[in-house]
Length: 135
Image (cartoon, rainbow, N blue to C red; front, side, top):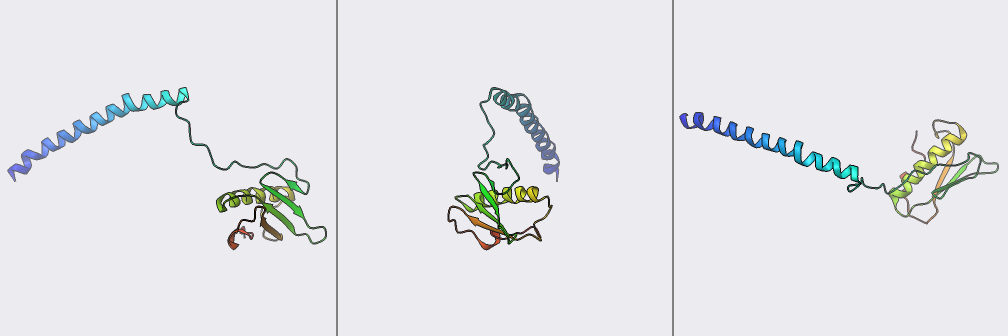
């Protein structure tokens, strides 16, 4: 028991010294270097893979490089052709098209609207991404 009582304060003091040195290094060496690198532009944040697409008009057909929204002449069905080489890119562009369609028809949900989604590049899209999932 005496050995533990004499060893405990030394371990505690060693831990305080090590943690103090780590705090000093982080506060006065690492952090200022990182801030300086950001100011100089050496370290840039990662670029996003997909960029949001904004429709420039809300009259049909709505066409962007990521999607095309058309309305059937008498059926009231909206046809959305979505581009994308991968499923995540397709889903991202489809979500942008959904937002543009909601804005164009001034609705907060597409539950009562018939919308057909299709891939413009022939991508095999799972069924869950081809239907409206707002409901």
